Length: 436
Image (cartoon, rainbow, N blue to C red; front, top):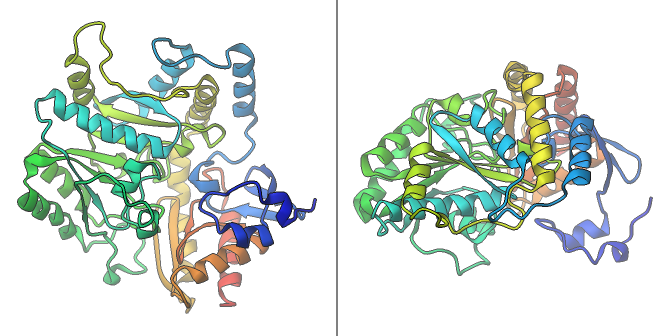
C-alpha cells in the first residue's frame, strides 16, 4: 500500500508535524495484541498502549462484538432527559472500583472534556454552598490536562498554551516535581515533598477562600512520567482540607490499573474530591471519558436545585453513548475477569528493572518509572525536542512505538504483556539510542 503527500493532504492531523509526516508517513494498517502493522508490512511493538489507551491489547473480540451488538440493538439515545441501560450499568461498574466515597459518575467523550466538566463541577459545588466567590484554580508547571479551553488554561506545558491567549483567568501554577537529585530513581523519590508548600504560599498570596480547586495528575504523564515524591500528594490533601479547596486528580492516564491499582489514588493512599478518567475506560475502542465525584460533591450540587429542575446545566450530545458504554462494560469485565490490575502490579517490578537497565546509556538524562509506566529522557541535542522527534521516527522503523513529548519517551506497555515483550521493548530502545 502506497501513500503520497497529495493523498494525505486533506487530513489536518492533531499534534503532528503535518508537512514532515506527510513527506514520509508512518501509517498503521492493522493492530492486534501487542503489535501494530505499518503500511509497508513491518511489525511494530506498541510500547505505549497507543496513547495509554489499550492496556488489554489491540483487537479484543469481546469489545468489538459488544459494540457491534449494541449498534444493532440501540445505536443512539439522546442523553438529555432520556436514558439507556448501558450508561447506568457502566457507571455502577466504575463506581465499584473507585475509592470510597466516590460513587457518582458523569460520562463525557474524552479526557479533555472530563477536565472541563470537572472545572464546571467545582464551580457549581462552591456556588451551591454559597461560595461562588471561589473563582481561582491551581495547577502545576509541566501539567497536561487536555486541550479544551479549560484544560489549556490549566496547562503547564508552554507549547500547549502559548498560541491560545484567551484562556481562563485566575489560574496559578505550582512548581513541577522533577528535581535533578532524583534522577534515575525508580518509583517514588524521597526528596521533594516540600514542593507541596507552594500551595500554602498561593493561599497566603491570594487567599485560600478564593480558590475553588487544585488540579494535579498523580503522576504527571504527558510531560514524561513525573512521579510524586513521598508525602507530596498527602500534603496537598491536607492543605486543601484546611482551606475548603477541592482536590482534583486527573487520572486520564493513570486510571484503570496503570499503577498496579485501580487508580493512582489507591496506589498513593490519597482520595481526591473529583477524579477525571478516559483512555483505558473502553480500552480505546470507543471515545469516552468520565468524571467521578465524592458523594458530598454530588449531593451538594443536586440538592441545591428545586425538585424537577435540572441541577447541572452541562453535558454533551454523545455523553454516555450506547456504543461507548458497551465497549466500557466489556473492557471492565475483562479487567475484572482476568485480574489485570494485579497482573500489571506483578509485571511492574520486572518492567522497572528492565527500563532502568538502560541507565548506562550516555544519551540519557533521566529514567523515571512507577507501575507499568516509565519515561526515558534524552539529553537535548539541538533545539529542545528535536532529538525526541527523530527518535520516535527511528524507533518506529526499528519496530517500536513509544510516545514522545519533547525529549522524553513515555513507555506504557499493555497489561497483557509478557516478560519477553518487555525484553524486546528494552532491546529496541538500547539499539536505537546507542546510535545517537
